[in-house]
Image (cartoon, rainbow, N blue to C red; front, side, top):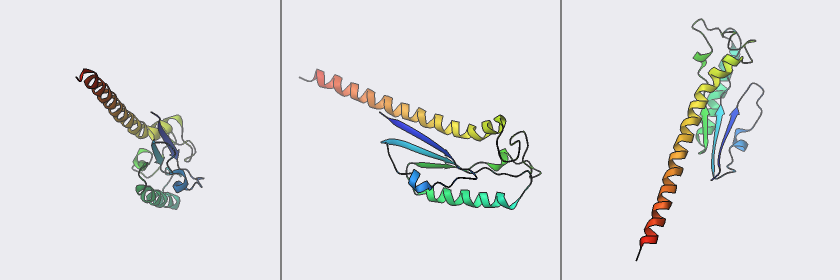
Length: 140
């Protein structure tokens, strides 16, 4: 059985139409859209604009069955002083290795949970097929 997971990271230069990307191409397909992360060392109007864009995309994708929107928790990158740590984004826009790790850990957890659920369902269906075959062969 083919099972496909696609992950789209929305960014500052994303000009893709999410609706076009959400059309189902495979029988078992789940799309993850990760929101635009905050940017700029200090609080700025662009962070507010990004929050609105993420909210709009989240609402649009909520109507699509095979999509999950992952809003980036700004608290992962923005300190209590409102600043982004340069250890996460060296230029306050592009991630460092540490920043990518923080960004992708929640995504990794979701994908692992999803795969575990898929394996459970797949094992159950194989067990059922096996049981049905055994019962059929023992029938008089």
